Amino acid sequence: MAADGLAVSRLTKRFLVDGRTVDAVSDVSFEVAAGEFFTMLGPSGCGKTTTLRMVAGLETPSEGAVTFRGRDLASVPARQRNIGMVFQSYALFPHLSVFENVAYGLRLRRTQAKELARAVSEVLDLLHLSEFADRMPASLSGGQQQRVSIARALVYRPDILLLDEPLANLDAKLRLHMREEIRGLQRRLGIMAIYVTHDQEEAMAISDRVAVFDRGRLIQIGAPARVYSDPTSLFVADFIGKANFIPVRVIKRDGTTADVTMPWGGLGQTNRIVAARPDEDRLIPIGSDGLLMLRPEHLALSDGAGSFAGHVKRVQFLGSTVRYAVAVDGVAGDVLVESPRAIADIREGGPCRLGYSDADAILFERPRP
Ligand SMILES: Nc1ncnc2c1ncn2[C@@H]1O[C@H](COP(=O)(O)OP(=O)(O)O)[C@@H](O)[C@H]1O
Ligand SMILES: [Mg+2]
Image 1 (cartoon, rainbow, N blue to C red):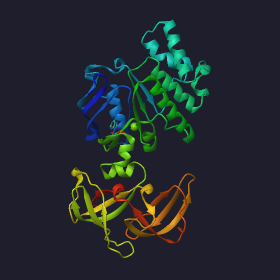
Image 2 (tube, rainbow, N blue to C red; image 1 turned 90 degrees about the vertical axis):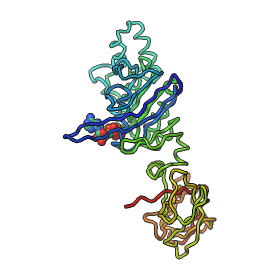
Image 3 (cartoon, rainbow, N blue to C red; image 1 turned 135 degrees about the vertical axis):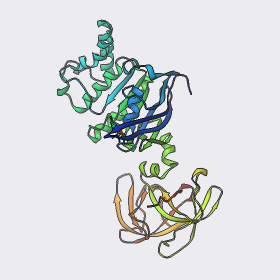
Image 4 (cartoon, rainbow, N blue to C red; image 1 turned 90 degrees about the horizontal axis):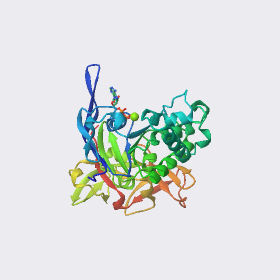
């Protein structure tokens, strides 16, 4: 890896809870490059915070190592790691002014008064907080408080900025604004950031790379566009973005393509549909059940090469797109189709055909119930 990056290798954390072992993090490895915005994404309880705390030195790994710029951090205590942390709860000192909250880390480091005043006003300026320097945290809005907590983490020029669900307590509109602000700030400072969120859209919007976690394991890592377009597991396909899963049976396989049927027939037909590009490591045996993943924007309401029949249940105008909820025999739940504009002759209550192109379909093995 690059000599100036962070490496997490084979990190495992076990907790003892009521005499039982809980694997919070299992064998997690990744690297983060200098200046990169890296996000750990996954549902609640999947081990994101525990991994972040091990990087910060707030939690001791059961196994594995954290290395920064080639140095093993095992023997470096948290306060010597030069890492800034931002939490969902802001964790500001209520009895200290904004200025003193931000200055706190510098006072701990016994920074000289002149240098301290300069550094604090610089970072307050950076976060548009100068006019609030003398205010108490309770008199600020949630977004302003979160900016103070970011200023406090940045003031001593950390090598790495760690952010654990920093926007979770803000309302939806402010969340969008603050995520752009955090990303812009990180870019300008060129600082390495490791961000934690359970919100897949937020992760996709701001990250250079995303690491998707499930039950303590890192299961896919890559650029947002890559993880979206080429999920390597059903979990990631389902967790990132919207996806339809059409039950199929695999009847033939030829290199990286597979032929499948829709055994339920889709209004009676049992036509063969060429589909999918299963990866080598997820080749699905002939005769077995599969799930064909199709994103709503990859389905067209027309006769396509691979097409099947449905019944339009609902048409929703969403502004920039039109969403069709389609009932298809043999498919549980609605199949969602998203189109940039309304399609002529497709009406609520009427029949339709759904077409897709093979290149957009991904075949997964169907999990046994
Ligand atoms: N200090 C602890 N003691 C016992 N179990 C813990 C502790 N911290 C976390 N866990 C457990 O480890 C798992 C992962 O937790 P966490 O890292 O907080 O997940 P996330 O941040 O992804 O929501 C959860 O099952 C959680 O209950
Ligand atoms: Mg957490």
